[in-house]
Image (cartoon, rainbow over all chains, first blue to last red; front, side, top):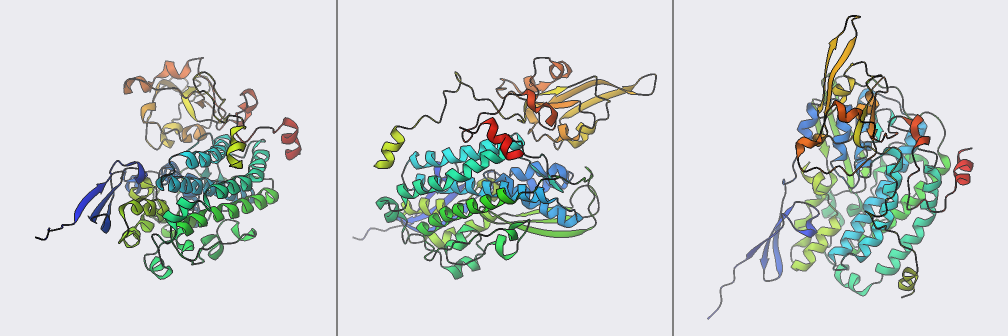
Length: 367
Length: 157
């Protein structure tokens, strides 16, 4: 007699340590093999896009902090760029450099978290993650020094930044920039040729370049598949065109490549930081902008290279003090779309590793 | 293996929190808000700038046609400490606080009334008020380590 086998449904989450927040993966299994994965989200929906329509342009800056809370500075940066483009506000040079320094520190911090959680999900419980936390802690200390908070910075303003840096900031960043390559080498020593990491990640969850483009994947995930696309180079904003840095790319597009991609991007961020600290000019950090800003009627789309991918803001103004429409193009949500493609046919243990390599932040997925 | 031994002999990074406390940033945006009645003119710019509308201010006019603040209250249970109210105040009458251990058993206890805002025990933060910075102890940083005052001066001269 033949046993009848039926696909089996397992729910990962909504509260699961590996889902980076309140997030559910409805998994259909045939034995241990994944037949289908359906990401179900919305548990963390706060309606930020709607809330923003009832508030003034300045009052929306703190809300952008709460989109991707692991990379609040870049979320700020994208929004202020959009409003500046809409209202035609000039930014002083020092403020542009400060924004670049903050964004690159944020990128390092976010990639540290991504790599740390990926190793966590590969089974190296907590130890590598705490190594990464050590460096992230230093970055958070620097942010706290500048803007008084460690997670929700609310630092950027239209026409500049809210505060100039304190006197001890630049020496501290210099020290951090000097130390950081050594720490990245240390992670390499621990993980790069680790047998378990190689066995779990090489060739797993492959994302070919054409599929990545079709799913409009962006950021480190796209580059790990071999596509050289970085908005900092291809559509430069702020003062990124003044720095000399490379865009590392992967080749295979597997989990290992995505992990390497983030490590190499951290090295490039350190390079940008070195140059920015050298070049930063003295001067004003903010132009005078009315607190009740009324941009002219029109619409605008501005995008930046956030740590997780292309972060875009689409704003429609009807000439009043509040935006008529406030739309975010979240990189995490769009990168998540390709999860189903990547994980089909792999074992359930690999699903968590593939999911970790996407590096999402559920607050940004749901908004 | 060499890495393991190197880490075995390095100093600690963490501290034992309740016994040992690190000093926070000079610009920290924390509890409790500080309100100065002598400087406030009752213009309510802070209330208008708050994204959540948690500041309630009632005023009346006195004999010389000037505003008098009858009551000002902050619902700090709903506050997200963005600091926009402090930045908005044109008369430097509002300050952020520096303390951070503000857990309460009830949401009502987080309601800061006029007396709480004027309590002389409140620690003032330099957020939005850079002129206060020298009075506040320097932040303890992990990365700061051996950076001396001379290095800071050299960098900025």
